[in-house]
Length: 310
Image (tube, helix red, strand yellow):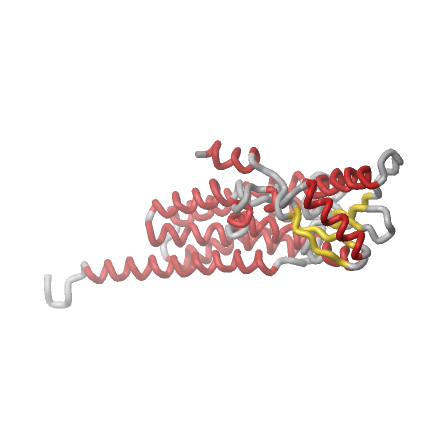
């Protein structure tokens, strides 16, 4: 199960439905779009824009991963390695091939500009990719300790939130100030990490409250064996097999990874969906905790004899 969960997404990884922009005159944009569809069918979801500024704005808003700009007549590539280094490399190689096909033998290098870069201390984004699994383990560990050592629903919820805030501050500090893997606002990055840990921890605590120890196992499988491999944090959701990338973004590890990229490199752009997913899991965990508490209370009342009877 572990091998399948972690190896399958990597082995079957491929580019599909990656949103990019193509900027320039209508005729040139149509030619480039047609060439892309012929070379890589289904690989790109193309947004046509009039000029370079519009393409750059889409990148900064996290609506596309990059752009091919033919405004000047010669293709140039605008990438955002902070959004996905893997997709940035794909766009570079693809644009080079397109340029060679249009002007064979001229030897002209295709201009490539990285609009939103990764930090100089971590140009491959290794720290962000490696941080995905510890966040899942942190949320799972928090839930396990609280359910084993703390009694009372309110105390467990408070403990989960406290653990998440502490963990968010610590992990963000390590990634940003020691490893140099994050840019942006430290409080925003810490908040993104804390929300991810809290969503993971509280949802598992809620499952345990309702289902007992089996709930921890169910939550661990959902977060570790499904959520983490399908998070797309190391590459991009659009590089995972077919539907799996979309599924991964509906779970805390995937939503948390995308939220942290937005706060660290894009000034918070494109955070709405990730925040909604994480808050939904957080609220679901709280509701499950309350449901479990009510179930225990009803069971206790059912076994308590009425006054005057023994």
